[in-house]
Image (cartoon, helix red, strand yellow):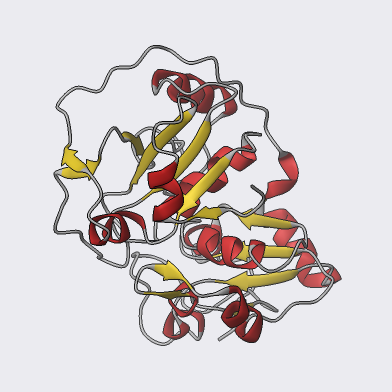
Length: 274
């Protein structure tokens, strides 16, 4: 498969594949204040992939930033994931945190990884098997190897450079009011506005009922050129939603500004627009 998403029907049909690993992308606190009514349940045999606690660099004052290659490899092995595993990732909200987990595997060099379109709500709607989340989840240690793919992530210095060169298109996945600097940022201490030269494509416009819009609809609403694409948001999570939407319709090189607005908005020397 070459696409980044799979359907609930595909997952159900391939559920017994011994190389399949199902992960729930957990992000308990999110700036959108979105919640699930089924926090204590999961898709049968899923394993918890805790973005904030386990798969972020918690020594970094910025939220949800990339873990080290060594940390990622160690923690993924603990989940029983192997080099030859086919990974399907879902989240409780349909499409929210799962694209971030997908991107983490991509940046660590794993190719066979996919997002479940519609996530947990779509799985339940089909009547497929769920279970209470087990108290203890222990697995035989996997042989996963992480190989960092440098070009999939950008630093603030590279974003500053791109403001001048305009070599890539910078896409901001935040809500329109935040992009335009209307009102205060949800995180304290941040300026309002956006990175100069960026365009606003709120991630919410790319999803309907917890699923990505069809390719035809995405082609209709997403501007495409021949330039590389850079993605930003509040803290590097919803930027990955926009990235996957573009991955569905074009093969332009794509990367994420990991610091996103949480970094840019607090550094007074960096330029902003409103």
